[in-house]
Image (cartoon, rainbow, N blue to C red; front, side, top):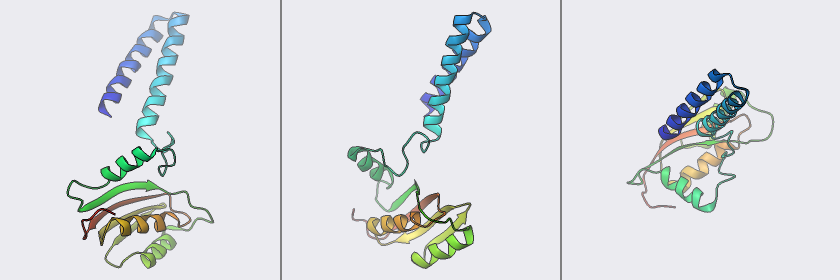
Length: 157
């Protein structure tokens, strides 16, 4: 991402320089450069706006890579963030907290703020972690689920 920011800064500098020349064509070029920078920065800093919500637009290979990246090298942690697209009347934070706590194992820590759910603790395996995350994402009012879950059973599922 730092390379994209460096490229963005170069484009921004060129756009500003072209705007300072005060030539109509240079000003148009500067405006185009600034627009490209804005699109580039939004794409890298807001993946949800770029269309990568819940893996809906990811290929199978990209989804496999995403799964690999969510685990640490020893496969003892499963971590990441997923965005929810739940239907129904949104619940408040306390209602979401109560519902999540009733659905997940007692040893998991749950915190909710403005529809953003944070889960941490240990679960038996990756399959269990994925099932819990999907359940939480289905709760109306949940916008995102951030998780950092330790895995007791290190086999991949």
